[in-house]
Image (cartoon, rainbow, N blue to C red; front, side, top):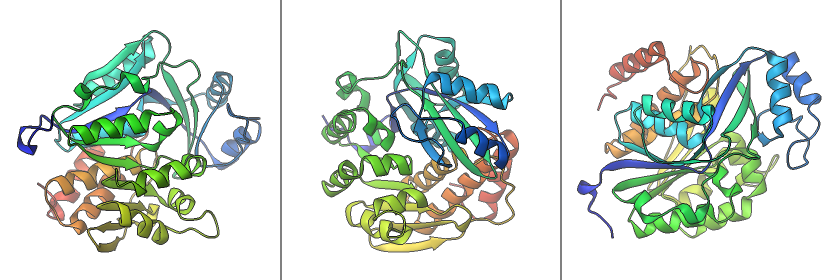
Amino acid sequence: MQLPADRREFDFVAVQPLALVDHVCTVNKALVGSLLHNSGTCARGTNTAEVGGSKRVSFEEIQRLLGAVGKFSTSAGGSASNTAKGLAGFGLKCRLVGARGSDEQGAAYEQSMQRSGVDVSGLRIHEGSTGCCVILSCAGLRTMRTYQGGAARLPPKALSAADFAGARWLFLSAYCLYGQGFVERALALAREAGVKVALDLASFEVVRAHLPELLELLHRGGVDACFCNEDEAVQLSGGPGVGSAAAALEVLSRHCAVAAVTLGERGCLCARDGEQLAEPALGGVRVVDATGAGDLFASGFLTAWLAGRPLLDCARLGCLAGAAVLQASGGEMTEDSRRWLAKQRAARGLCF
């Protein structure tokens, strides 16, 4: 049954089938190069020496990386989780649907989401461990190595209509494509409930590995808003040497009401209902860690969109939110970065 928009309890349901705990390590170029060069192969048998993006590795590799860097910070992670925390920080009502392990890491993940103001009533607790991700942060670039081996995961059949009841939007990451049938199940339930869909393309490796499925999802018209970074955009629109951010925006805007491509220090490209614009990034921002910048961009953009603001305001608030999280470590804003964001919003007339 579809509820009228004014009777929906949650602005967003963020679905992340596998809870992740991020271990963020700040490293220099020499160390990140050495760590990746000596890492051998990842869980799926491909070379792990490629800097940037995200790949799955063994638990032994996670231990090796953490042992080598020594010092790191820990927080709840994952694209959907980060975006949900960002949306909740803007005052929107968000519910998390997924699964965590029965271990201490899982409990810490749940508590972190609760502290951020996210409703966790849809988070299941399964016997076993919670997934983890080592994030090597170097000069504003993050390289992620994720262990999912024995981690608790929400299977597609566990999703139900109740998970989407009372929601206006579903936020989903393309990482969910690693779970066969999960995205299709989530989108089908969202359509039945009259819930709109926002999709983040996750990483260039995901786009490269699942390009046919992604294009099919877009062509079917099941995605209302789509977000990606420049590397993902290149993969979506033809690959290195062929694809581009502008070409990807054209592809996305043909199938989605809203599309945005983040360009790092160059800002973003956005499109909505035939309108396109380029918004420059804010200058003079000290970059501590790029973890979560794209996720917070999406949260700022969507906050403005749901408030009925024009496309320019959506792009501006997205860029400001991304810039705010760049100034902190681990994909979460500190009190200082929140105050900075509030000041920047007020100066630009973006308080709503």
